[in-house]
Image (cartoon, rainbow over all chains, first blue to last red):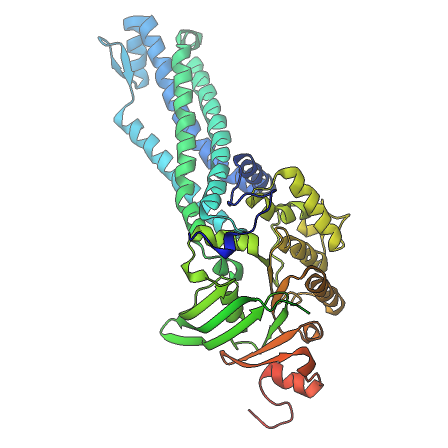
Length: 230
Length: 256
């Protein structure tokens, strides 16, 4: 920018010379947008809850089986084999079968696609809102930030809910199948680890799903956005 | 009524061609225009004359295919995204036909949004926002969401919002298009008050001939070019004359 740029020469003590959107304010705007579109957010979150709960279920299942194996020895190994687990007695570990791994990956992929779809819809129906914000001076990066914060909040809520649900179901299933010792033998640290992994996976999926729609929203020219008929 | 005739918007040789599929449509065929600080200018013309396109050029919402637009003697095509955002935030206020308020925010939040972008702290922004809403006559409605406001009230909020950062130019695209007669008149009165009391330059693109009474100058656009520019004293406000100017052809059976 040149030194004597007439456009930039408007001193005013109360405002900066820059365009800013404080983080706290973006958080507030994103939260309010979600709250107003509560029902739509619930639908987006529910697919995440299902996929993450499945992941947590599978992971905690393995933890339950590992716990059983470590405490129960050979007898437990036979019970587990009969139940369909992939047991390695010498090393004392229970692994996820390849089939199970594929099913989990697939469910997470389907969930991501669903999130991308829901976020695309959300961006499209807010075309004119985004255009107006740009006319008011919003930078592209601010628009992206607003969408990503929304996705992060949805992701956190959905992932935590899903992980906790999946963990509870898994422990229940273990109790029913192997008796109370299943829940007693399981290592708490392992369970926390599994729940943590599931929550992290859910958050990452939510953010990945919003990336493309958010970039689309940011690149929109304000005039097209304002004139958009939908 | 402006003592200094400083040019705030300068349009030089602007053309705009749209490509619709295989067809090329020339919306603007070479427009030259100068708008002075503190003026109230109305851009008028029939549909398809290019007045909205010209309006978008002036407001920095669209780039010309050829020619230049200068706002305060700065070529806006040379500005990067950051500077353009700064321009839209500080220098220009927009008013639209469809109001375009953000539905999830209250009236006060809508008005203070540009101030937030400008970095004003929340308390100052709130005070100024309420002051502006009082100015447009909505001092007791600041907690309402756009859904809870009538069309005229929404447009007033939009007017208050356009004043958020004390812009030098207000661009109004068909501000009375979605309003009934009396509400439209109120908005025009409001805009006139802004022009005379605050010295803001107002540029509006409109079909509404009620706007003619308050405009300092009127730019008639026809077929992508400026047909004529008239000052208020020169305007011929008779029914037949207006009809011809607005629709582009004579009303008395002469064909066109």
